[in-house]
Structures are given as structure tokens and as C-alpha cells.
Length: 287
Image (cartoon, rainbow, N blue to C red; front, top):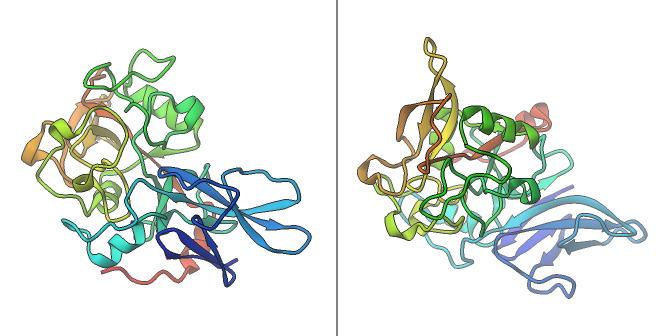
């Protein structure tokens, strides 16, 4: 099944154009996942806000993000990349053979890494909304600066983060993965008062793949642990008041065992459902 983005609000499925502007069945809403269905009777395709529809077969989907449809090149995002993430996020398109092992909603595929990464930071109500959802409170280790401890938890220490990730069939990113996935942000700055603890679009902190609040808002736990000190893990990206220390390469050690602070949250990743298929996929080499 050939699914591709043709403009900021339209996709093409096997040659047929499907527009979020033309559909009578859905309302175009930023920060929303949409699904592509095939009619079992006449093989026509439609877009829907619902995963399940009678007489239709689910064949794929995509995320219509918070990034404006007229988004232009900025910081380390060139014009080509800006076009790919404006409106419909080209990297979020998934189908039967091209998808993560987990729920694909709110995720983007990173071609250079062959992994999927959450567009949005972990929210405090992940049990009801999944780990990648816009317009909710950022999950953190303390209730401060608009952030909230996840519902039914007492902290956001490492073991809690691992448990949350596992419950959604996801994992933490390595430092190497983080650097590549978050590239494109304005380096050496932090969000400061532009951040209010809500998961949203802040232009300078958008990665080339459309990942929101990628750096400079809250540190996120990584998968990397200290070789000789079991209680230490790398945190990445910098928080809202870290100034020149924030960015795609920002990192430091923190106690994975006891540290639960307002300045540390999380973002998850997932491996591809079919790594062999991804290896054969013909992605154009990105500059």
C-alpha cells in the first residue's frame, strides 16, 4: 500500500487524494491522529478519526500535528524538512508493514535510526491518553511549573519511568538516538517563560522530524546507565531555565534510583515492527 503526503493537509493512497479539508466525516484538529480505511465492498479509501468502522478495513494512519501548515525553515530545519513536518507530519505515516511494535499514534519514524519516537513529552494522564498526546500536562517528578506527577504514581524516578514505558510497549532513547532525533532545534537556549508545563508547540524547540518541545523544556531520562554506578543514568536536553546548556547534545548524570524532580520528565521510543522491512525501504538519503 503506497501512502504519501502531498501537501500539509492531503495524503495520497494508491493514487487517490484524501484531504483533511474535503472530508465531510471529520474535523481537522491540530494534534490529532487520523486513520485511513479501505471499503471492503468497493475498495475506496476514506479518512476517519476512528480506528474502527463497520464495512471498512484499517490500513494505516498519520498525525496532523501542532506545527502550522505554513511552517517555514527555522534554526537548523531547512525548507525541505519544514515542508515535511508542516500540518500532516510526513514521518508519522504508518501502514501494515511500516509501523512501530507499539501503538503508532503520536509517533514519528526516524529514517537514520530506523526507530519510532514520541512527538510529545510524556503526559501525566498517560493511562487514558497514551504517552504522546498534545495539550496535556507534562509528566515530571514534582508538581511545579505546570508539571504534574503521573496519575497513580508518587514519583517519576527511573523505575517508574521504565514501568510506564513497558506498559505502553515502548522504551527510553539512548543518548545517540536523542541527538539525531532532536536535531533541528535552536541550540543553546531554553524555553523559559514560553513553557507553562503544557504539552504544546514552541517553534524554536521543534526538531527536524516534528518532535515538539524536543529540548530546553525538561530533562528526559535516557536508556544509558553508568557502567560502574548502578544508580546513575544520563538525562538529556536541558530544562526550561538551562539557557546555553540546553540543546540536542545537552546531557548530564542523575540518580536513576532516587531523583524525582520537576525538571526531569520523559519521552519514549519504540523499535520498528519489521526491521527487515525497514532495511529494504527506499528512504532518500537525508543531508
